[in-house]
Length: 371
Image (cartoon, rainbow, N blue to C red; front, side, top):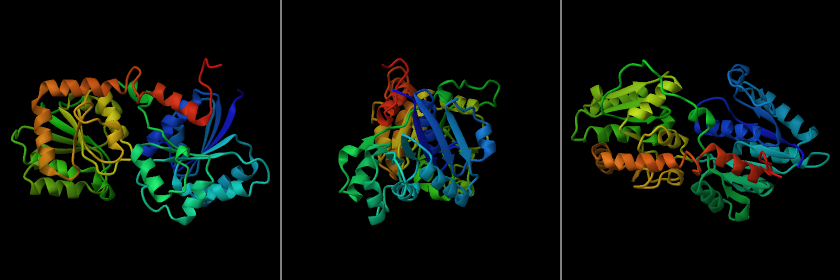
C-alpha cells in the first residue's frame, strides 16, 4: 500500500482540552502510519506549533483564529489539491467542506467527521443532516455520541457511525513526577478541569457541597484549573464553610500534576456532559482512583465498582457517600487503581497502541510491519 495523503481540518490542536488532546493523539498515530498529513488549524498560532515537535510526515498551518483566512485556504486546498481522504475535526467545518468537495472539478476524496460530544448532541437540523449523508464515515468518541447522532438523523446508515474512543497519548505515559515541589496535603481529593462559567456541568460545585458534608473534616480538595468562574467557586466554598479546605491551583507543570494524581485519595469529576473524558484516563494511568457521574461519554471510560465509582449527576448526598467510601476504604482504592490502570497500559483498550490500530483500520492505513 502506497503512502496515503490525508487532509485534516481542525479547529485547534495545541492547547489543553479534550478535543485538542484527541487531535494531538490522532496526528501522533497517523505519524507512525503510512500517511502524509496536511493539517489546517483555525485557532493555533505559529508559536503554539513551534513548541511541539511534529512527526516528519505531518505539516501544520496555523491561522491564529483568522476565520476568513482559514476558510479561503481550506477552500483552495479542498478544490485543487489531491488527497486520498479528508478528516473534519469539528461539525462546524462540515458544511463548508461538503460544498467545496461537491464543486471540486476532479476526483473527490471521501470525508470523515470526528464527532466528540456536546457539539453534536443537539442542533443537527435539515442542512446538517444532508451534509452528514454525504460523508463516508463518522467517528464517534463514545456510544452516547453515536446514539445522539442517530436519534437526530435517523436516515443515516448506522454502519457508517463507528465508536472511536480516545486514548492516553505517549507524551503522558513518558511524564515523570516532579521532585522538590511544595508539600501536598496528607489527605486530599483532586479535580482537573477548565473553570469557565460555561463548564459548570463539570460538577465542581457539587463536589464542594459534598465536601462540606463529609464527616472527615481533615479531607482537603485541590482543583487544578483556571478560568473566569474561580471567584464564583470560591464564593460557594465560603457559603459551605470549607474555604480553608478548598484550594484552586493553576499554572502547574505536567510533572507537578503527575504528583497530584499519584498522591490524591481520589480523582473526582462528576461531570454531566463529558463527550469522552480523557482526564479520567490520565488519572487512571498515574494511580488515582476515579469517581465520576454516570452520564454520557464517561460511561465508556469508567465502569462502576471496577475501574471507578459512578454516582448520579447532581446528587450531592450520593457524591458525599461515594467520597467517604473511597477515601476510607484502602482495599477499594487499590482495586480501582489496578483495574483502571490496566485499561491504559499493556493491551488495554485506551492505550496509544490500541488507538493507533483503531486509526489504521478507520483511515485505511498500514501499521509498521503489516503486509
